[in-house]
Image (cartoon, rainbow, N blue to C red; front, side, top):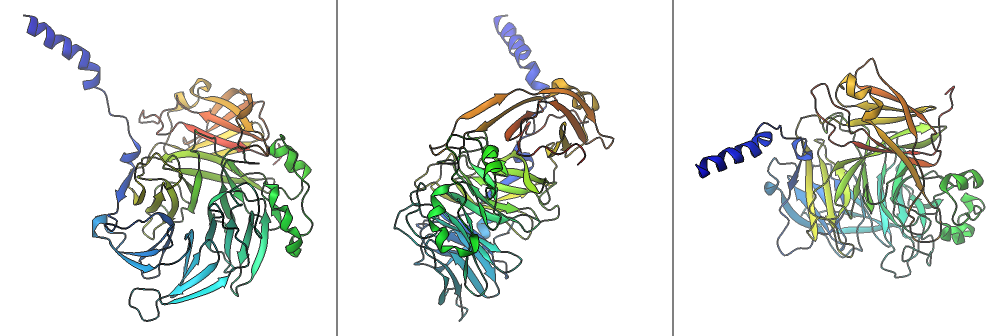
Amino acid sequence: MKRSILVICCLFLAAPLLGAEKLPSEDDYYKILHYDLPKDEVLEVGALEFMPDGRLAVGTRRGEIWMVHNPLADDPSKAKFSRFAHGLHEVLGLAAKGDWLYVTQRCDVSRLKDSNHDGKADIFEVINDDWGMSGDYHEYAFGSRFDKEGNIWVVLCLTGSFTSEAKFRGWCVRITPDGKMVPTCSGIRSPGGIALNAEGDMFYTDNQGPWNGTCALKHLVPGCFMGHPDSFKWYPLARNMGPAPKMPKNNSRFMTEAKRIPQYVPPAILFPYGKMGQSASGIDCDLSGGKFGPFSKQLFVADQTHSTVMRVYLEKVDGHYQGACFPFRQGFGSGNVPIRFAPDGSLIVGGTNRGWGSRGPKPFALERLVWTGKTPFEIHEMHAKPDGFELTFTQPVDAKTAGDPKSYSMKTYTYIYRAEYGSPEVDHTTPTIDRVTVGADGKSVRLYVSKLQEGHIHEVSAEGVRSTAGRPLLHREAYYTLNYVPAKNG
């Protein structure tokens, strides 16, 4: 009798679970595949590039370049590794052109070639080394792939990530096809990656620290200032740049200084610290035409500390880039640094945790993120409006929940623009979502919001929204950096 009562009680307690539908997870839509790295080798991945013949070039922090043969096999264990070059200095940029592989390392941009086709580089040529080094461990140099004019853009980390003790440290420079260095932007602090968007404009990630209240994605506009003033000392060597900007006022705000300093370009995206990672790194743009899912032409940004990949939607308001960032995929093996879209539309992710630590427990990793073909229910884009925002979704929404203001919550905040390291969230407000209308397309909503805050992150949670299939959003949060409020007649 006691046994029967026990069984009935167990069934009663389990009943809600037995009938419950499993909530979707990131893994249902995007699978992480793991490469088997060569035994007894240390591949702390710092750069990725696909060669014209389909090999994947992998640059490492230890100054090596490895080639991955058959990198897009369904079974990653079928990929084979061979060392292409060594003796370089912390490779953090690769760009392929014909038989040449261009390498951005700490001291220069060089190019390498395998002239006798034995699988190893035998020609090493320095293209440009016109910047300086003090010997500090933190003087990283991240290089882009080629822009439409054939230039490589290089962002040069400050000395110790605080001051500029060597020529052009804290600058972005362009290396032209004929090997000349063109000073391009001042104000760089501690970059983590650099890449082009779909329109061919260059962006880089900068990390929390002095004059950077949180990690950010910044648009590199030639002739402009990106935020950290210790680079001003090199303006006499950059005659193409004109005079140095005004010194930013300590303990100010980003948009206050943007109105006061004409050359200053405020961050296009502020990544809320701790919520969207702690060390923004590699960038790449989805130009796969749908092979990676519904996020064509959006930017994807890695985070080293949280071992994640984030998603970014950008738009232009008053001629300036701004937009929203969204969680996308977590669970990678190490601290993500470079990311690179493959020809088949999958995303290659490389990483290391040396010296920094990461949620991913491995000391280094090389992985591949593959779309399963299933479309997640997500906020697709977030657009600024004069009186609020428009959200678009990847799937049709349930009109009742999507049209209910109670399905959403919103708060705003920003960070202090100051010489001190980082910043807490400050200037919090709670705007009111007065009403919501569902678009005729069934896949968009207009949020009519009172008290928008220029210069603030607008954090939106759409916790109550459901799809027409009754599913909740895979990720409910969006974070829009509202530097400029669109004009009412815009």
